[in-house]
Image (tube, rainbow, N blue to C red):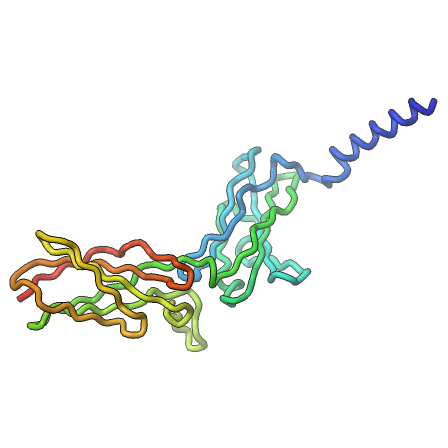
Length: 231
């Protein structure tokens, strides 16, 4: 009798583990996958992959919170959406804070559990894009002006904040002659201007630039090549 009772209890426990603990619709096959932040110039976008049990009528719901807080908040514009991204730049706008986001997916009659992102810090995890180049040819050589990339964060007057105000940046400028060895120049972030002298006359040179994050040891890809001809 005791053995039968024990078997009954074990059976009830296994049923409870497979059904009771999940709640309505919390099916593992329905949960979104690979929830993570991808950040470029402080544009902090949450990405995820569809669940294994994917269909065309899935809708996603996104929430966020600051690390250490208990309360989750819905992200405006990211409730019952069909896309696989959500821009959280405005709610994760403090560069020194740590954030979490979570995603749930629903379909008629069912909703998944919330899937948590890794902890995210904008200052440490944002990548930076290349600077914009402005070139002018003088008798002395080529003047290179560098404009830092801009973030989606805005000042009180509505103007976007330069990445140079949010992080320490330096730059590399690549001079590419038509026939010869490429030269590299380093520019401190505060100067934003470089004069390249002693160039061959009536010669076409191309230049590219790259942003460097020294503290993080990260760098952007090289930007688009800009070409000019000397006098």
